[in-house]
Image 1 (cartoon, helix red, strand yellow):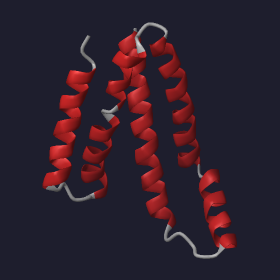
Image 2: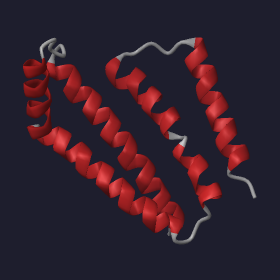
Image 3: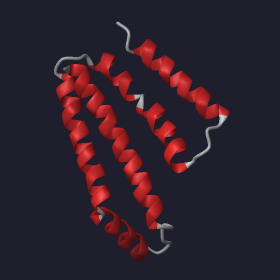
Length: 120
């Protein structure tokens, strides 16, 4: 069950990042004035998708706590690095961001780090 909670933490975190990027991209350019910035961010905070991302972040915190009841922090924490794999992959797929050679190498290094870092 611990790995289920760990997976939920990971997926909820990724969900939140992707949804926030999607909604921020739809909101337009960040204003220059302090009042414009406050209004822009206030509107985003009332956006149901943004609210769902914030709820997902809270859910991720809860599932993280549940996972840590059975797993050592030094074993579980490297798995959260997979957000650095999933978010860029989804960014390429959903937002058509470039998949450069350095990004691909970085993703492969993160995967290797998770494998090594989660051992023992």
